[in-house]
Image (tube, rainbow, N blue to C red; front, side):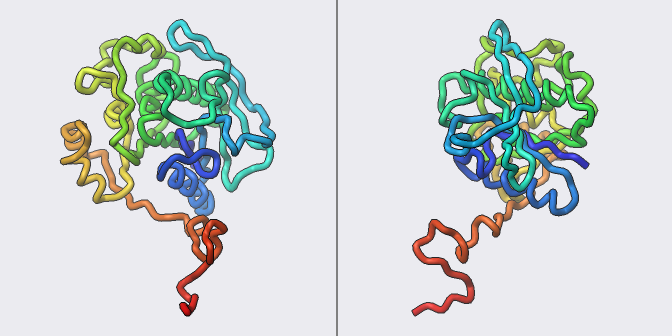
Length: 268
């Protein structure tokens, strides 16, 4: 089995919050279990990229309406603990910060389109595509309903909701950015009168997970406007408790601590 994780963050490449920790640990341990698990994420001009060499494995061109972008998929020449692929879109994704730009809608929609262009070109495609949070929320919709990606519609998709506080909503004036799809399916991208990538992912993914069983229950009553949708789609939901990567979060070896300790350390 080959799993491709699609995420805006992944430790140690780029980290804003817990999303990066999960995406940086899950594939590592899946690979140890014998599953081929990989990550594709944006290329940022951050400290990870500085002074590091990369190899280009794929190049292509994408359109957002009348906007045109060249892009490439890179891999670090010095490998990480699991395969990580970086989508570089000059002038759009390759910035120092992950979020909080006025054109984040364009940035992450272009990222998702670039990922699908790359997957479409593969001789051996993933067995499962695992999207994380709203930044990858359109993956399942585009695979199922965009004409260009019809060859991908039978690949199972999973969406994990790490934080429903952020849903990535935007107005219909940006509908022009989408690849061609059957407009009879437009209701799948709509929630409360706006285009909502997180709601879209919930509607279109084969399965949806949350970061714990209790968070799933919380979302049914405090889902930032998605309560009814989550309840209606509950048959495809699972709450799976996130653990921690004890190889990273280990007080006995953590170099950021003033003094290391373990459960065997004696206090003075």
